[in-house]
Every structure is written in structure tokens, then in C-alpha cells.
Length: 73
Image 1 (cartoon, rainbow, N blue to C red):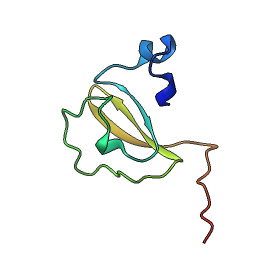
Image 2 (image 1 turned 135 degrees about the vertical axis):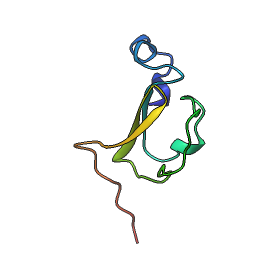
Image 3 (image 1 turned 90 degrees about the vertical axis):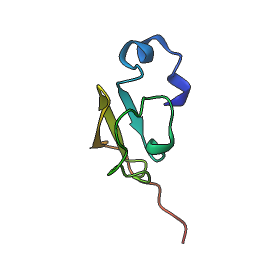
């Protein structure tokens, strides 16, 4: 999603208090305001999960149709 941060459609729906974060690293990001506690945030949720943030309140979501990459163990 980072490649879309300057696209008009993205900026129309995203601001410092609201947006969508997909995949890992939510608690370390700086694009969406973290004025709320990140306690309880899953930082390594995987590629098929993310967070919808509305008015600074994050909600974990499951992305339908997105599969996790399988490791080659």
C-alpha cells in the first residue's frame, strides 16, 4: 500500500486519524497517528490481516482472498 500514499484516491480516504494498514509492522508505522495505546496490537499479524483505523481506533481485520506466504522449511 505504501506505493499508493500519494495517489488521489488514497489521500481522499486516509488521514492522520483514519486509514488501512495491511500486514506486519502496524505498531512501528508513522503514517497513521498513534495517539491511542498500541497495547493489544498484533505487530506480526501476517499478510492476510491488517488494521482499519477510524478516528484513531484500530480494529484488526482479516483480508478475504489473501493467503499467507508459505515458508520453505
